[in-house]
Image (cartoon, rainbow, N blue to C red; front, side, top):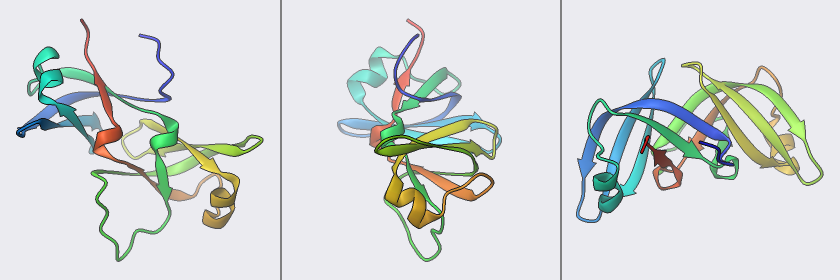
Length: 142
């Protein structure tokens, strides 16, 4: 599969929580990291989603937010993945920040120059990659 979504996490379904219209799918992506995706029930059925199924979770780099200090806050985003900045690549308008997650997977975020400066993002810095469950897409083999 070729797709422009920079973040691709291979995982195994550990739970499916059906709702009236949407369902939550929880994936283990290794090393204690998990990702939650919200999908329609139609997609859940079409993908034959079940516990134990191997899937790929995807999110565009523009959907990944970075946080350096979350103390004292509770976020509505379901996915808060801890890691360390491995690279900051500056572009004309934005920069791309690569984050090595604790479980070994990589997350990539598109961040404005202002945010890179104000957060002091640099190689070796601990950060949290934040991704809303509704921004996560799932793929399974046909």
